[in-house]
Picture 1 (tube, helix red, strand yellow):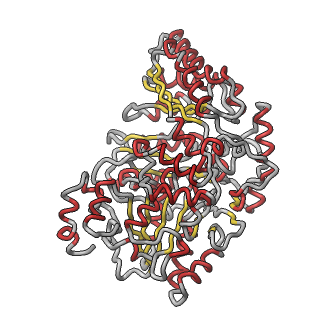
Picture 2 (picture 1 turned 135 degrees about the vertical axis):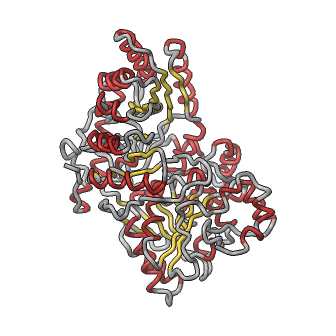
Picture 3 (picture 1 turned 120 degrees about the vertical axis):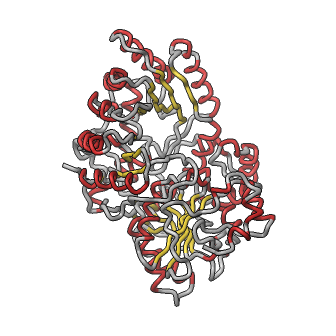
Length: 591
């Protein structure tokens, strides 16, 4: 770290809110030597510090890179607006949190693409770093921009700004890119980029090719057992252990389920050892067993049971993401509340059985009700549900069925002389995602979504124990517009950035009028493109990225959805999606 940093930045740090976001020096940060590192990457998260420092993908890459003696991974997060303005006023550049070196001095910047609404934040962070916005304009000494994450499966909307997209798992390919940088310092920047673009799992807009995702087989050494501890409470302030990658359920709206195949389970012994070591190293009083579907892990009950015994009396608590109701048993409920009770989260996604079949949820009303009753019997009095409205082929009765499901739960609890639980429903608006069976289907119009919200709210007096929280339809429309967007959106995103769009992942920052004015300038109609239903016979622009699933299989799933026909999860029987034979891989279960 620069010796005079606090002297040089004193007036900026004392003038902004939460200066602890910008000083680095967190417990367990790597703080590697910038000058003596052969290759340097700044893992750059286009959202606030408290969001980015919690991101597990960043923690994995930070651990892997810093495990190589000659390589360095630093961190950078999107500063809040006050700090950004102070940097500009004082002619200072955005820097790596640990080294305090300007981001423009790194070999690579690695941006996390978690959310479409963060695109303009990336451009603003480049401006604050004195790095050219358009990749074709970057100079020889400017860093190579990498980007990876869920949004990279359609790289086109920001393809003018990113040098290289990492498609799929980043554990191996990140080190391969750094190796090329180390061994080819004599080559020009463009020659190095071209060489890097030839790696499997790397898409380069300047040298476009059909790009297959990278698949990494989980191992113990690649998993962190310590990570920088935030100076103040972060969004997920806990030790995280990834127990499983991929999901065999294949819900038709879910991009992660289709892009992260095949399922790969971590060995139970490794999970237990990693959890114990992570908690010991960090001092966290909570650990999370992370997966797209955690209680689908073959040995989830044994894992939690053994960890409970290990942490008995310590006050250390286990956390699981949203639960599969068909795998949630009374035993699991009891195991999870061994130290303290919190909220149980279950994701039915749809209220009616017909709609759950349309989306291939493979979940019955009886299973949902029984899961909630099991929780209530064990003393849990708070339940959180995730639902989606505006799904393909949805009818009004499907929307109203959300309220009917809650009424059925309430009735069952009363019949069993149980306390009726407090239920919070988080209700999202369907967003069609590339590489899913519903990728082609248009989103409902804003008027239709508002009508459905009103329809459901009319039933609120009948479910007084339920709180209904709706995602903002206008934000969901922007997400749908961006996530399926083509390279035509690059100029649109640049225009937004020039007009002041920043940190739009926080809804209060979104200027909807600005979005529509920018769209008008480039003859784009946001609602028309968000609600457009694509022709499955035509090649979509995101198909240049290959996640392994056959297009014919996706189309067949889309047709099955219209008939409310389900597909058996591939853990039970191969669904013939194509990933395993296409990529010569196979699912890995902890049997």
